[in-house]
Length: 433
Ligand SMILES: Nc1ncnc2c1ncn2[C@@H]1O[C@H](COP(=O)(O)OP(=O)(O)OP(=O)(O)O)[C@@H](O)[C@H]1O
Ligand SMILES: [Mg+2]
Image 1 (cartoon, helix red, strand yellow):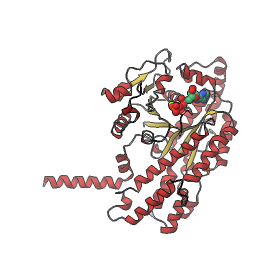
Image 2: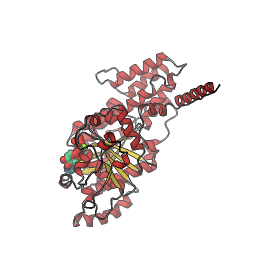
Image 3: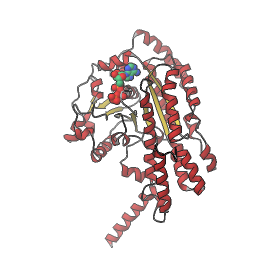
Image 4: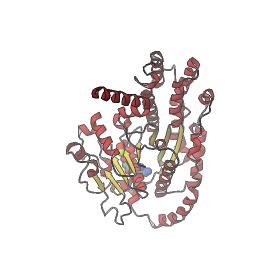
């Protein structure tokens, strides 16, 4: 099954593009992989890969080229042995083109459909920093995609918390929107108004009446007892996965204090303590990575030094043994059935959403993988990502396809889709009569 993996960060300069390129290169060793530069204002992917680009997103938008005609494969000078022949990328335009940089909904949707039609197992999206529709619409519905943090840019970590919050609220807004089955024809308008007003209070950090979704759910339970709205919110939270990678990793203490701790605290304070967090690993801070980018010859395309090669051989063996353990719980454990009693459910905290647990995981990972170098960092992260994709349902990590807002609505509202089909059929029958 195809997987689209979006790479984002709250703010710029944390290493999204560096991560996206090398992660996509790693994935391409497993199956055909396409990297798409959606940070269309900076065209940074093409500036980091020294390969001639015949067609890019400019040709897709302005010249009517199909997206699969805009794929660029690596020049033989970068990949002489063909080890990365399964890798291709779609470059952003060479210069800023307003309609592409500030993509309108229709153009965005055309691109999304073309991405859905690409023939590859893995599609990696390098998104721009920040939080507008050009980012949100490319992010999955039920998980965060990969959020990249770095201890060197703490503000970006909190902004990544905002991404998680926006994604959750986007989904909840769809569920409780006008016309949803919760408030269908016979539905309760008063409840609809109340739920949306309460969601506004939670979303607004300046409004201190309701701080987060956990408080909201407790209040809703107090007001209405067990009810379908509450179950819907609870399902959204329980099934939402947050995945992150630490870039420019400089040791446990710094990473923990400057990224993980504030991130977990932000989520618990402003979103919910029921979210399941997964640390996919880290990439060390290494001048070689930066130099490789500057030379437009990504680090994973460069041959390892002799010293690295000998380490590589031994580590590969260890890694294959450790991969069974991975310093990880089986991802399915996190997905255990929710408690039957809603009251229990409301007070339940996902252990992975506690700072202590995240520190423990970080320490465990460091203990078994702390001496790894850049190449192994990417191998490890890729391995973990594949592990998650293999063991959890498709929507748990990445997404099988991108949806337009209307499709999201239909997808979340199967009853609405059925109703519409019935109306359409009835209309057709009426027409026939
Ligand atoms: N692990 C690392 N070690 C050393 N330097 C790094 C590392 N990761 C990224 N860099 C450097 O940090 C800078 C920012 O990286 P990059 O362009 O990948 O970030 P970005 O998040 O994509 O930025 P933007 O938001 O501008 O697109 C670059 O100069 C890159 O070479
Ligand atoms: Mg970038």
